[in-house]
Amino acid sequence: MALSSERLFDSLGHFGRFQACVYFASVFQAMSCGIHYLASVFMAVTPNFVCGFPGNVSSVLFHNSSASSIEDIWTLWTSTENYIVVQLENGEIWELDQCSRSKREVSLDLAYEYKGNKSVFPCSDGFLYDDTKWKSTVVTQWDLVCDREWLAKLIQPTFMLGVLIGALIFGDIADRLGRQRVIWFTSAGQFVFGVAVAFTFDYYSFVIVRFLLAMVSSGYLVVAFVYVTEFVGIKARTWASMHVHAFFAMGIMVVALVGFLVRTWWVYQIFLSIATLPFVLCCWMLPETPFWLLSEERYEDAQKVIDTIARWNKVSTPCKVSELCSVQQDDLSSGRMGDDDTSSTKKHNILDLFCNWQIARRTITVWLIWFTGSLGYYVFSLSSVSLGGNEYLNLFLIGAVELPCYIIACVAMDKLGRRNTLIPFLILSALICVLIMFIPQDFNILIILANMAGKFSIGVAFGLIYLYTAELYPTIVRSLAVGSGSMMCRVGSVVAPFCVYLRSVWIFMPLLLVGIMALLSGILTIMLPETLGKPLTNTLVEATEMGRNKKSCSEKNPPAHSGAALEKIEMFGQERISADK
Image 1 (cartoon, rainbow, N blue to C red):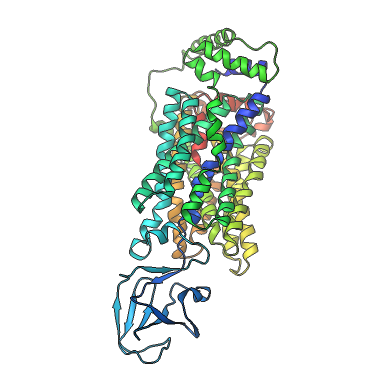
Image 2: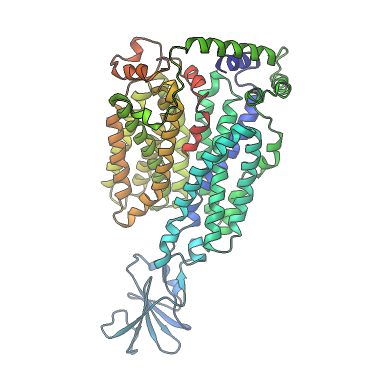
């Protein structure tokens, strides 16, 4: 396929007008994936709250401040350990905590401090929520507080579990039914399930519909990556594939903007879901990729697509399918002859990634980098709304900082090398995590800037690990290595929300965990070989020898072949790179 694709794009152009239209249309919808992945940061906010009270209130007391309604007290609320004293119209005095309420036995003067007897009652009259910022969230809708708080904390992990399953299912379906059909289904599914979330009638239906939304969102991201890379030539493929993630980051920025403008969760969800409606209305015009049509022996349909590309790109003599098939057949024949001595009927499994000490150490390191990249990415993103200051601006900046990081990753991995880019950015992200711990909590701007730097550093490492993983392993287990690494990445995304919840134990606990993992990953990466400019290996013996070679790749080969390497790698692992989100 490599030679035939080179021949096709040399004839039609590597990134002509047709490819540009298909690319930007497809990645525009990738914004919806970023939108839904991070929507819960505002949808599932837990505002300040206290127990409800039985009756009508006549006066409210909070420390030395008094008011006629609880709404006037929320601006003074500073800690979850606070309580509010209310006097009802019948003379009863109640102390309202977050998860319980106490009735004073002796109701004399209304005072904040009381040393007498009290009767404790559960919150059977519901809860009172601070609606100064959010008029409604899923937490306030279904009282996901106190003994039901764990249900709120499962919202993001269950979504990420859907991401994992969706990537597995739709990646396989796209190979069987075609990329075009899956793009149609998943993009329509994002709109339908996205709107349906807003009309769910209870918590469990909400979680189920969000789970389905996660599956189609993940499926779209996986298949869209394959789709655009099969339309883009080798000269633009590295940049094009990397910047699919940039549109995902733009989706995060959209979440911040809509969250700022809309403060009712179900209206907020509807606006997020219709943000990419234009693509849903026109996605049916996108053609199937010629390479999938050729693999299914639909030669006439493939030729029609090629002719359309040529017409848009103003190519007078487009490549013929018969020429591509002949080149591909010659490539397969020579491949069989060259691989007679190395091919085997043995079926490889996960244990082959631990066949010797060199490969096992490499596998553990690569898995750790995948896990750390995903963990750090979502910890920085999800915790951005808790940094102080304007939470909407915080999330917007955390998304915006990703846009330049992928440009830096593309340039650095071709100039400095994969390992030499990965190591400093992993260690830098660890150092930034430590630095944030020493910044005084009232220095909000400095804390936000440091978190942006941490997200930038982990984003660079996260952006290039796929290509580096594929280059580290031989042909016979390369797809297995990339797939297993991607699975570790998804595990990291499931764990990340629980890591963020550890802020309740210690405010710096999530940063400490990410910092330790990033530092450990950076140190272990030093033992990995550099792959820039080196040919792809075919056997485990060759891959092991590459690890033992201590010479820099720049002493042997010019560092200008990442595009060619990516061209070969995509034959056996394309559909996995975007599943890391």
